[in-house]
Length: 185
Image (cartoon, rainbow, N blue to C red; front, side, top):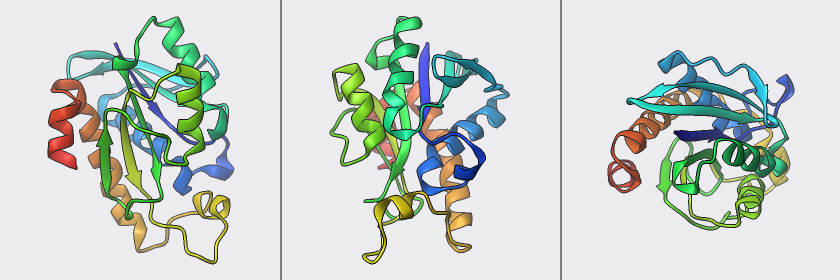
């Protein structure tokens, strides 16, 4: 079973923000593969289904971003999965809007949700898909930027990027992270 986690913040006030791009990709996967993500369990919303012939669990932590690892840890423990079964999707301010970068391991790069997942799992070795949300303008506070919404010009780019990230998840499941990295990076 693959555990596919999209990072974001719960509640309507955060819908459509840069920080919630992981939730957007989970919604895309939910729509594409007809997987309802509506069960409240393990401090998250989860949905069970099949992608590329593999059983998957789609997860949207409801702990708020900085405590995402609590949900991930509970899910991993409950389903007795190891880190090779985990794919995490999240926003990255160091990438241009809409650009993807796939990795099999690495530091948190300043992302508090990833920091918490690494702390909870005790390792930085797990597959991840970073979705570029653009660099923070110099005059803006980081929290205000990532909790802000995309501009009218950025929205079509991000819609396409969310679809591409969903395809990248399927490629990781079907092939492996290395082949997917060669394709998308």
